Length: 117
Image (tube, rainbow, N blue to C red; front, side, top):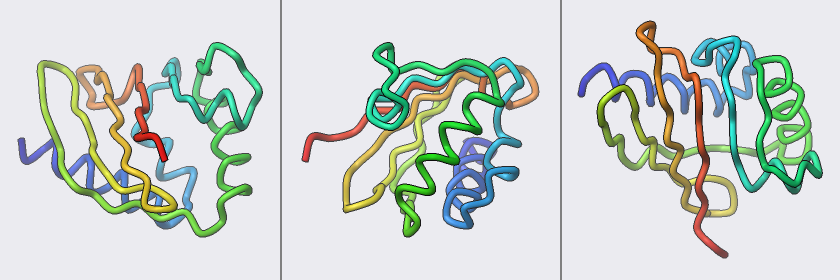
């Protein structure tokens, strides 16, 4: 559990610094990300992007759109080879990201969930 908590704290810290290189250190090269915000930001109807470089391009656009982005870590949940990071996102919105990890603790698949506001 301590490893998962440390992972989540470092992930949130990297986001709050708006440091894409540090954020992407948490992800495998072949990572897949699904989020309703991908539909909004990239106009990608599947809501999914694949590969670290495509994810970088998505997050660059998202950070440009929300320059004051800041996350507050609320809880870390664990399972077998996955964690869920529950946090307060922009505009007070609640979010949970389910992240499936490889043996090196790199995210290979992530699914973002947001409450309706």
